Length: 328
Image (cartoon, rainbow, N blue to C red; front, side, top):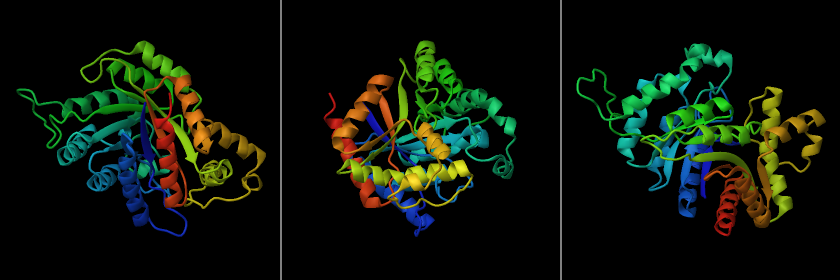
């Protein structure tokens, strides 16, 4: 089973945005050495603690600092853009970094309605998502005789496309188009199993893929002891609590008493959102990954390891990789 990483370029309290972008590149280098398959960044807007809004630019920064790991979008929110511009951007990346670029596509705006207006996008753009995906595919194919509009760069690169989602809609579309499917179970796990069933049962082979290929997101925080892992995991728990409260702050250092930080209702909400999580030492991480893989049957895990201190985050990825190598 493949292991990959999803990165948001978290801006840490006491640090700045440039440091966050460089930390993402450094983490990708470390992941490459550990044998991770992909390193993806996500498009989010108007969030003080996230530095990956200009997703193609961040991908170039990371790919330029690595050698072989696949780098991509997990994902680009296609309703925010025209398919033609995305074809040009990712076609350029594919020319600069051959056979290393992935393009995951999402239907959500990745932001609030006010920011959506600032992006000059019609909220109804999401209704055209299937047609936009097909149009984007067209621009990435080799040109045909008489074709009037060509993406330059872009045409002929056939950048691998993924459909990403947290509902049955994305699963149905990925199956219909014969594309790989990634489910955002790291923050929206509710429909995970139903979506995987819909994807596999409805899959239609295509030039891109002969049989279904599914990925699922999972939060994993690993440390030398279970107690230390639980403490490190409070950084993500605080971030999600802020999200529930409508706050958009920076990534916070871990705290010793998370129970005194949130209300019982907030705790229940956070636990639902983060139910696809494994927190602990190597043995617990190994068992958790195996259980999740057996339950879902996915071919790839997209890991979110939201740890505040860079050194502790590096170690978390090391323990995860080491644990995966000993899975049966």
